[in-house]
Structure formats: C-alpha cells, structure tokens
Image (cartoon, rainbow, N blue to C red; front, side, top):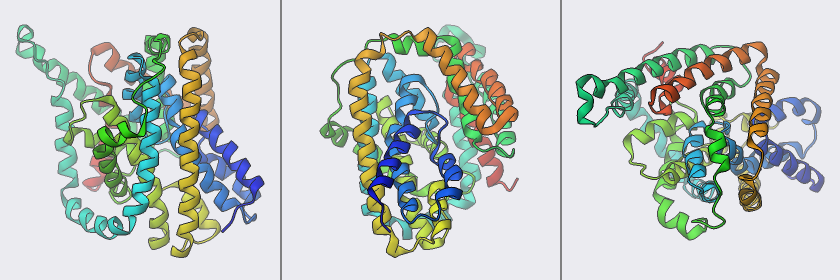
Length: 408
C-alpha cells in the first residue's frame, strides 16, 4: 500500500474538516466518495489518514460548544466543565496527548492483548447482563442526597428521578438503535446534551469564561497524572471490540466510571480519548485476524482490499502518524482560539450552532432523525430541571446493552 502526495494532502484536509465540523463523520465521507474513488490505489490509505487526523480533532467542538464527538459523547461533560473553569486549553491538551499515547500503547500491546482479550471476554460474557444491571443501579444510587434536613423522601427523590430519566432514555435509545438511521447516535446526543445546554444557557457561560493562556498541557503532566487512565482506556478499547451490545467507547467509558474513581474531569477525558484511540487501532488487527472490523472506515478499506497481517505495518504507520498530526493541529488551533473564544458573540453563535446541528441531523437521517433529536432534547432537559446528573441519559446505550445481554 502507498499514498500519493496529492491524496495525502486531500486526506489531511478532509480529516481536519471532519474533526472540526460536527456530523461530518469519516464513515459518511467514505460512503459518499468510495464509489467514485475506490479504484484508486491511494484511496484506502487516504481513508486511514483521514480517520487518524480526525481522532484528536473531534474533541475540539465537543469541548468548545458541547457537540457530540464521534462515539465519545460522554467526553462533552468533563470538557465543558473544564471550559467553565477556564481550563479549556488544558482539556484539549489532555485529549491530544492521550490520543497519541493511547495509539502508541495500543500498537505496542496489540500482539499481547489480542490473544488474551477473547479469553477474558469469554469469562465475563455469562455475567455481563447482571453486571450491567448492578452498574445501572449504582448510577441511580449515586444520586442519593446527603443532607440531613431533606428527610427520607428527600434523600431518595434523586434516585427516583434518575431512574425515570434512565428508563426514558433507554426506551428512546432502544427504539433509535433499531431504526434504519445513518448515524443514530449523533441525533440522540445532539438532543441529550447539546440542545439542552443551548436552551439553558450553559454553553454561553462556558464560552464567556476567559480561558487561561497556560495550563497543565505538557506531556510530562499527562504521563505523570494520566497514564494509569490511558492504560485502562487502552485495555477497555480492546474489550469494546469484543463485548456484544456494548461496542461504543461511550458505553464502555460510562460503565468504567462506576468502577474506577475519576476525581478530576481530566482523568475522564484521558479515559475517553484513549478508549476511542485504542478501539480504532485494534480494529485494524481485528480485521486482519478475523476479517471483522467494528470501525466503519476500517471495514470500507477491507472491502476494497482484504486486510492481511502483512498490511498492518503500512496501515498502522499511516494511522499513527496521522493521529499525531491531528493531535498537533488540535493543540495549535486550541492555543490560537482559546484566548479569543470568550470575546465572541455567543448568543448569535449558539443560535447558528443549533440550526447547523439540526440541518446536519436532517441531512443524515431526514425527518426521522429530527424526531429523535426532538425527543432526546425533551429528555435531556429533565436532568437540567430536576438537578440529577446528565450521565443518566446514557441509559440510551446501557439499556439496550442490558436487553442484548439477556437475549432480547
């Protein structure tokens, strides 16, 4: 496999655009262009470069304005929290360095982990449904209030409301995932997270907060403070390719937070970024060893030309270099943009963002996508109004996974 310099430049441009524009997914670009360009010898590697460049850049819009980032939707919450604290640049740096380190670790560990993970999965699979139910219960119980004056009813009001939100989200998630939609998660999470934040003014508060020009954005900080979470993310990224009904990084990260203490938002961002990066990296090995890839672009490459172990050095090399370029672009754009972000007219930008996201949902999935987004927006407003954690809407992914685990 090789790539022509012109194809390389084009794939870099497409990758940057896919990272910066919510809804413009590499799967969509590949699906549109492959029928026209699939016969070109450089196209498979061009798709891989596009995928790698977008890997880190996709976190920029999610941290800046709270839009879904690929399959890492839950990363919006800690990213926006850091923005409100004036630590937006640090959040971008955590994502960028975590992606680079996770890709490198996944490449090194892949020969060791791939034989072990199937055995680990086989041991966990019979208990997966029960583990998911217990994890969901823990998610509810985390809403118990500690105030003595609230009384028994007050203490349990939070879990009851959280359960209601969880079940509503689970029902909508199950319905949406069984509809013939191009990108069901995009419509869901624009509704669950972005639209409620725009309506409640949270995004304006985050945007108006003056960002620190300097922060913990050096690689030494990432290695010292975040390496354990990156290593965990690499392991979970491999598992996300094996667990039935629990295949997206957002699902895996949600459950990981219930078992692993994540005291700082940077810890969670590192975990989410590394799950996404390693999940994509392991997909190449999965395609070469089993012929099955759980990442759309990797599957497209395999359809054009079956991926063999001999192809892995070229594919992994192009992907790793592209991921590093994307991480560098993320940090460069962040350093330029963050000091200026608070001065922008956010009321106008917020309205335009809402219209853009609705248009992208309609472009991807038509009127049905808009209906899903509207229903998700209504459910997403409930945590804002009731004061429960917005992570409860991840029932949209956990609920269907529970049903799948029990054979429904």
